Amino acid sequence: MLMKDEEYFSVQFPAAAEYICAANLRHEMYRLLNEKELTVWAQKRLKELEVCPACREPWFVEKIRFERGYKEKK
Image (tube, rainbow, N blue to C red):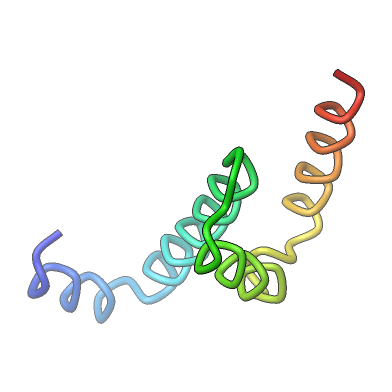
């Protein structure tokens, strides 16, 4: 998205912009959790995301717990 489009979108649709931001944060955390090896930077970023309100949504936390348990059994 171009910067001007993003600014317009955020002003016109603030709830949607917040939703997209939260979804992007969860996606980033999910992607990092599925990496085999994390860099030092990625480990720090993961710790930041773990306390982020968007990543503490109960349904997301449950999904992560379920998948971690499933992967550990394999």
